[in-house]
Length: 510
Image 1 (cartoon, helix red, strand yellow):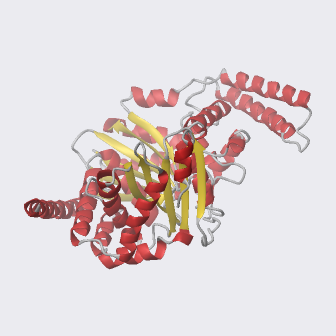
Image 2 (cartoon, helix red, strand yellow; image 1 turned 60 degrees about the vertical axis):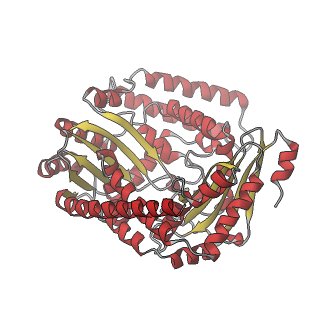
Image 3 (tube, helix red, strand yellow; image 1 turned 90 degrees about the vertical axis):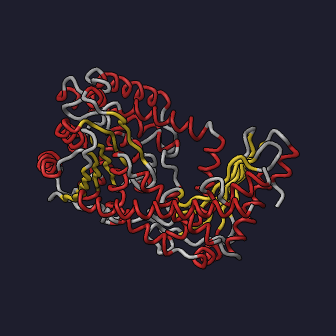
């Protein structure tokens, strides 16, 4: 064992040396090849030139996510993400003037139907039925002008790949890759869908989102647990709401609501674009100004959210279903700008990263009570004060109660003892290696540049965070664990297998 330990430490030291060397080289080179351009309308673009292949990737990041969903309209940020692929007044339509008129009729018919069905008395059933039919007829009339999927077809027929987007609690992102000789086409397409978006096929797409919710949440026991668990952990802050939206809201908001959401939040000063690939910054600057400069100048939306009050007692959510059991517990922590953010990253790595991590060794390898176990920060987002969560999946014959006890034991180790020097060294080495790997492809680099520029106002924070990791001490980890991982700051979620009464009884043991 001593020889094995010495060999491991030697390999660790070698890896650390390689990572530091590669890191220094990357830091210098990135400074030389990265350009930031801010247009007069407030849009910021970060460009990193990498001439290895004649392609580029981009990552458009909008500083708006589910947290900005208006009251009674949860899921609207995610809904607009879907709309951004429906085209413009020039893409996706056979006859825009006629379609525009037809879409206005759809909204008029929907407003009447929606009003009647939501009257306190429930509305006149016959009138509700008639208004619904009129609305559906208007939808069918508008559909005849649609060229389905034309935006995606243009991108893909010109060599684009990886066309996608995602909406999270904190922001919304759009991304794909393109041949560099299509740079101007990309600029046209990407700018136009934010300059002239059209809410076509809105209610058809709303049904798609509702089906997505049914699959991921309503028909998925873990999805239901996580939704209820998060709602219990946050009683005031918008993190309380699911990013995909509550069912009643999804069934109510309109294309008019989506347009209002877009008009408020999709402004140049609220967006950052990261680009990486074989891009000439000077040429790109002219193209960016030509197309994205058309976006109207508007002030960045005011950032106002309800502050989550301090939690002063444990909260517990238990679901009993014929399902694979699951256990999660989480503790409130400050947002990503907190001085201890790097400490939470270190805790997550030491607990969860790989087969030498504490939770893996204890719950998976030694006790063999879990198939998977981890501790993660940034749940459900990171921009605002959020949660550090521990979760585990029990192996057959073992219960969530056993996982709860084992996780608490590992938390207590952090609170009362010190991590080892080797654990800290391994954390720093892995952090640097992971980031270097993420920058090794255009997609990852564009994402990282946009995110750091948006969150910190400077893409160089991508590298400065490594300096913060180097300063994390054993004392910091013990201090943070003792401060935040306390019972009164804890929310617990348990998915208990209802198929076994004995297991259910055992799962409630404390």
